[in-house]
Image 1 (cartoon, one colour):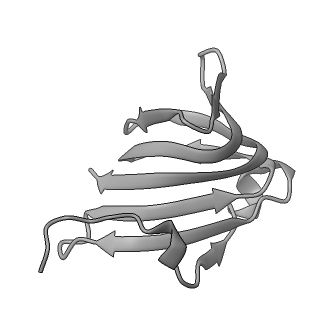
Image 2: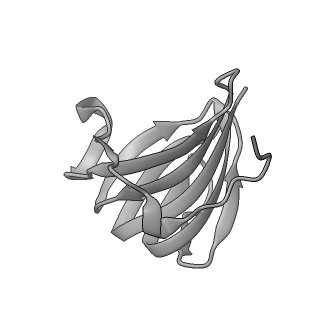
Length: 117
């Protein structure tokens, strides 16, 4: 077993398809594709690739998430803060307690690592 996880984007396989819960959607018809590359044995850390089509939906984070955008444009609207535009090449962390709106302006693909609190 190796302790190194690489993201081989040429060998992602079949994604899991999903969408935000209908009661959270504000605009559009966002659809998500997720390629979860690893889940730790304790099921507290997840790593992979996520993609979303355009739309807006409410989010509430109870976990830590590191993201690095590969393509697309999104805007994060944190409650009580100015919106933050993110695009290919941007990396960031969302901390537990984040509440707001995720807006995908152009289909967005990102690498992620999620750590449950």
